[in-house]
Length: 134
Image (cartoon, rainbow, N blue to C red; front, side):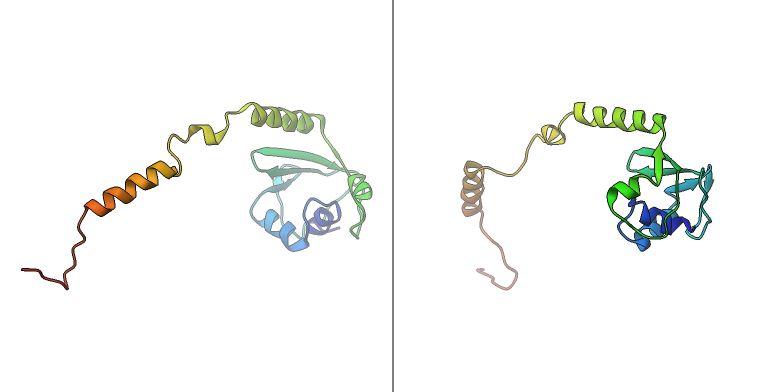
């Protein structure tokens, strides 16, 4: 069975074309080797899929030519214990990380700031090359 079809049937990607894009970009490797979308997949093959900062490693349990419901799709593979631990560790690290918005010292101007900007604008005279007062 083709790798892109299996990834689609196992619900890793919403469409086959998205699966092909992921494979072509090098996010998927089969048995430690870079794969092509047309690569033949067999039961027992190990897939390493990079999803963001975490690599998900699964072992192919079954092949299915068509996309079915989620419980059926989850029966097509088994995630390794190391992969599950790495994903939970990454999720915990994201949860404990500092809020990105806290690093912003100055955001949008407040109403008071906007009023001060408006006042300073009226003090400044606009100059135009088309109008000469001399």
